[in-house]
Length: 182
Image (cartoon, rainbow, N blue to C red; front, side, top):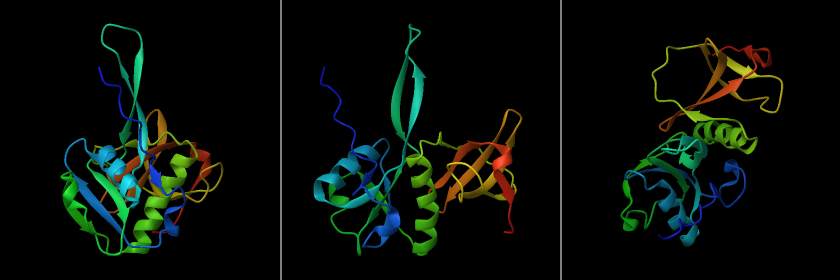
């Protein structure tokens, strides 16, 4: 059995997203091709960001669990180039999405970047949520992050959103957040 290839870094080069020297784009990729495309980008020296989270799944027939690193936004990877070139030649890309609002995109995706850098337990959201209250975290390691609160009977989840990619949830202490004007 061939050992799995090493996991590419989630961010290349390792720096905040707002320090990219070129425009951001989003590549819609074929199923389960995000990490392979990240490895291709790394090899070609193309700047990218692929947020991953740890997913624990039980191993059949044992009490053990297996940890996978899975894309937070399945089917998408962000990359920076002034004009996309040589992206389709990998055979992994279905479509390229132009980001018209670069500042907004970088601000929203940076919140995901900083939350994951702080080891926040982010998870993708696949459910549709009713509109909630817009809040800002005012205390703790994630102070400054803005999102929408989704009340769950067991906890308070803050929904972080990236236009055109989707949503992620961060479980947060309710006393750390304050309502803000939309």
